[in-house]
Length: 165
Picture 1 (cartoon, rainbow, N blue to C red):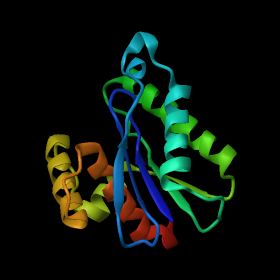
Picture 2: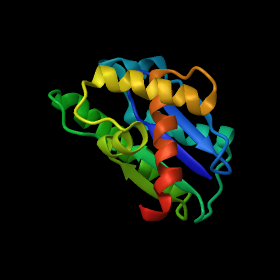
Picture 3: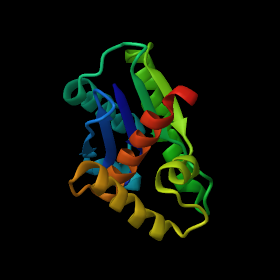
Picture 4: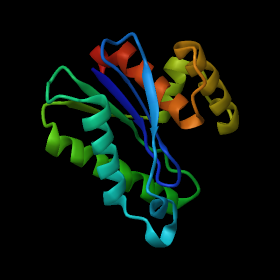
């Protein structure tokens, strides 16, 4: 099984998975409304929501053949956003590790999956998002959201390159 997560804390979290490496399933993990607001945000609650989705909807098992990838972050101009995303990612990874210690976890650099799957580099992020959605639509024959599209493409990356990662 392969699972890919595009982390967020201000909007739904994109997640994609495949039981066999070929059929791609995807969804968004809806966040508690309190967690989209700075004053009431709880990163632990966000991590618990991701863990609950993985446990109940995907039905992940504690098997070393399973791979979970979460997008890492590049350092942008907004330090607070970068710190928040790093916090969410680390808490999600920690929760998964505690519940499923045998599952292989990867942090995937955005530029790596974008270059290998989308064949883009040094393009404005708005344009990369368009290419990501178009590629995800081609892979799934469905209409994913922007974050679901990124998760689908991260999934494609880890399925294609898992043996070399």
